[in-house]
Length: 371
Image 1: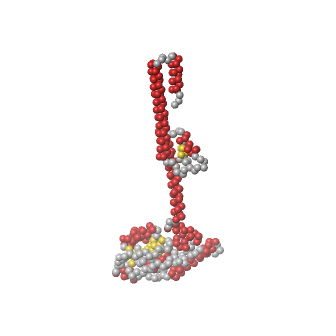
Image 2: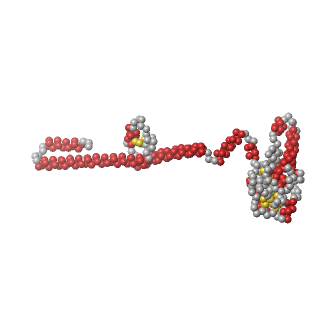
Image 3: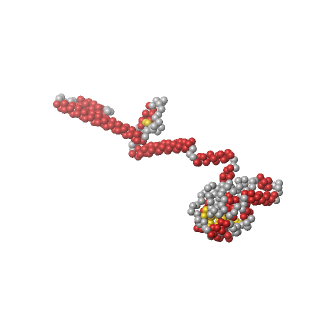
């Protein structure tokens, strides 16, 4: 594999590396491709001048940079096509309806070479001897591709967004081609990717406005690492949301408790026990508080409210029971007194009718008095 001409990436000269790897020789230099690009620029300028050198279109064209090359070493597809024309070679898109493209789509092994492009990166895939090689200048060396893998590799490149072109014509003979026909290459270890492809995004970013570039860099910093202030703001926002949700849940719970009391018929209608939702205490107690006293910041829970209601109801029931027991006891005592008086009357002197009537009236009035 040492006989294979392989050029590693230098700057943005991938188009140059692609051509020399395809032709298997250092047939082109940056100066050669720059001259081809300049020739294409002159032809385009002459075509634009046909509409008048004083026209706005022509003046605008002169203000624009070259579309065929730039100072970094990038060359357009037109430059590559003209360079291949020197060797009577042509290119056609792999996905086109050209008969050669149809053949390549059915069986990529029938062709001799392909060149691939995505954005500003070019590289060659070609047959040397009876074997296929990936001559991407971003790799550490040539990559041997099996016949079975070639079709899958082309499909993968198409899915990644690469444009693939088929080389039409006879490639110049090379020493590597002759040698590998006799001694096929064996590659136990695959080459590694040594550098990243120069992308259009990076080149345009170098030429963008400094303020805009600073905004992009700031955005990248926020994306690459956690910003403490941003994290604090997010935490505070989440805390506020949690408190709002908790408050809503408490209000709904209290409303549910009221509905439950209404259904059971145990709702306390006493004004003194009306719950003051703001401070979580009975309204009567709240009205007795001094105006300067601040209410408690901790609201009474639902369980505490229920317990207070139960305590009040128990106390009320107890008082009612005691009053009833006292009334019954008094009635019994009066009954005993009447009985004793009756007995005494029987044993002593007989009461007159007037005295008996007064006694009855007195007992009736006594019984009618409230306890």
